Image 1 (cartoon, rainbow, N blue to C red):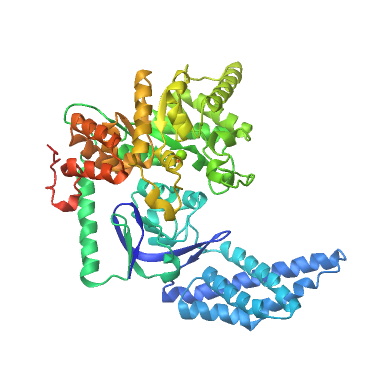
Image 2 (image 1 turned 90 degrees about the horizontal axis):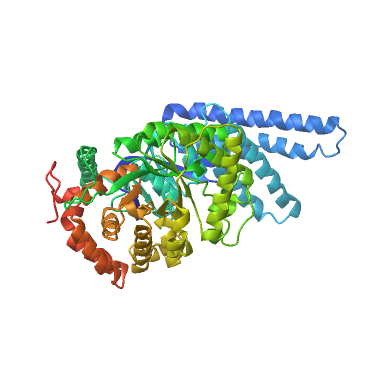
Length: 588
Ligand code: PEP
Ligand code: MG
């Protein structure tokens, strides 16, 4: 079986599928080896017993306080002893060799279906008791020794998930993830961004892969071609393994370019920096030859608990990032969150992408924003730190943030804290109104960084995370290129550096378009740096500039794609096409 999706992180991974269903907590469907079956039965029995003791205790407390409703819990106790529940659980684990969490979930689904068919309203209402009880068993299983979690995967797997939240991703032990396949998602979803950053092949937008694949099935994630192969055999499997080996060799070769500059054949230098979400990615960034961090997505510091990180913790993280990247700069973006990411849950918005996000939202969390600014200003004493402001729509937002920064600086100075004389401030240009008025923002900024992930979504009215409109999400649309060109021209006039930090920068063909439009700094996922560097080193600026000029008057994204793919085929050729190893081929 072959499932079609969107390849969002290149490479091939072969391995066993681990299914992750997303509920309040992720529920895993793990294949168990025969020797693990009986211990798993005991683990479930332990969780049932623990639940029984807890309910007895609750009932006892209620009865002792004279509460008349202690009997309600009799129903729970009866259910816990009901063979319908217990025997089903045990036989499911034994027959299907699945983990307890999954067995509880499956039995819950079966029994809930039965309850829904009852005509007696009293019996139907007991369904609530059942949900409550099974929720308790699930929690007890989660706390039991040996419970699987994203940070403690029992082996190396291909994760097959409906979707993963930023908190799941923050917790995930990426060293144990061979590949990722998700039902939903898109190239700019944070799952895809992280998979690329860890060099883990990924395919998203697969529809219903989690339903169609049994746990433990051998699958192949082909992130290069956007497909998931289920149970491949014979020559197909051998072919995939051979391709995997070829890619590894090619990667090793590209690593050799680490020390070389990203310089075009006619001498124009492009600075390549890394995007990072976690502090430990600094090492990956250095390994791939990044000249600093161009975008540190600080919102990941909130983690699964969605707690604002303290000033001290942030100070340490920012300071360490600077030390790791020295002598290069580190650009930290202020928390870029939507209401759904807030510790308190936040007020819901009818259209979250157009609601209170980024800087708009930080106005409602002034203490958290102040703590971040304090941490940044203090860390600025340790190296070239820069601050980037997300989701600015114009001068009003920008000035408000700058005023707050000055206020915080004043407080720190009065406390006698050490700070750099200047903390350069940049705007993440991702809202069209800000990009189109870049010339007006110039006097207040030290740098621009174009966030094409959002800019494309807002310019083309195509949700970046909705696979149904992925065909409309076109980074090479002439409208996008024209806006980028406008920003570059404005920034050049004011001698303000401009970078691109959206996913466009990581795609070699797109990167050449950006260089042609005059962009001289790119910030991208570290693993993509060698390939982009190779593309830049294989072309002349003169030719990419001419092609980009032509692209500005093209009428469709496809035309732009064709133009660049044709003109720079040599520079963009994938390794499989027989390019001899060790040779950086030129396009002219
Ligand atoms: C962007 O919008 O291009 C960007 C870099 O930010 P994020 O992907 O975090 O929204
Ligand atoms: Mg953005």
